[in-house]
Amino acid sequence: MSRLLAGIAAAALTLAATSPALAALKVGDKAPDFSAKAALAGKDFDFNLAKALKKGPVVLYFFPAAYTAGCTAEAHEFAEATPEFEKLGATVIGVTAGNVDRIKDFSKEHCRDKFAVAAADKALVKSYDVALAVKPDWSNRTSYVIAPDGKILLSYTDGNFMGHVTQTMGAVKAYKAAKK
Image (cartoon, rainbow, N blue to C red; front, side, top):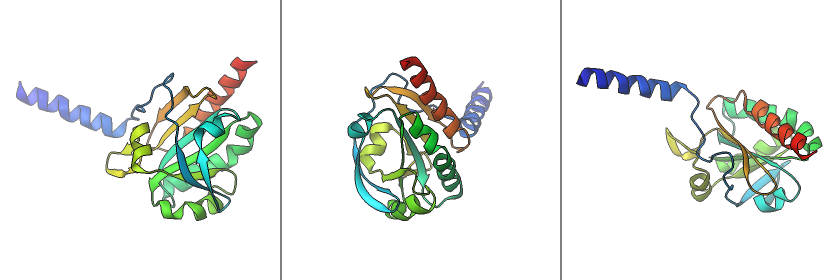
């Protein structure tokens, strides 16, 4: 019996490691408000979620660290999609807890001056429950779409960067369609 339980536990761990995890904050939850040091086009500024929500929905995507292969590719995808997000009235902001000293250059080089990237502190990572399991000081790859009223419209966690732009774009389009 204990071998059976051990086998089930091992299978569950393998599945958890290879499957997308569920984001901690759920659709309909109130997104925690925050302010963070950010950069856009290489220029520093203070990002505030409540202020950004006054303009429309916010696409808030967490990523592990600037200048890593997957995070760079994801930033390129969000940069390409940012004009369409803007047409829909949405603001895109990337957030990382990894190598935050490099966000200024990353915003220029890999976000292509299209959207801001912010530095997450431990409190922000905790409030969104996005700590990277293998490196808890960094953030995992989780994307949220937050409505202007602060409610989460989409909560999507997947270690693979592919799919985050598609998922968030779909949620913003659905929100806009429902508002018509």
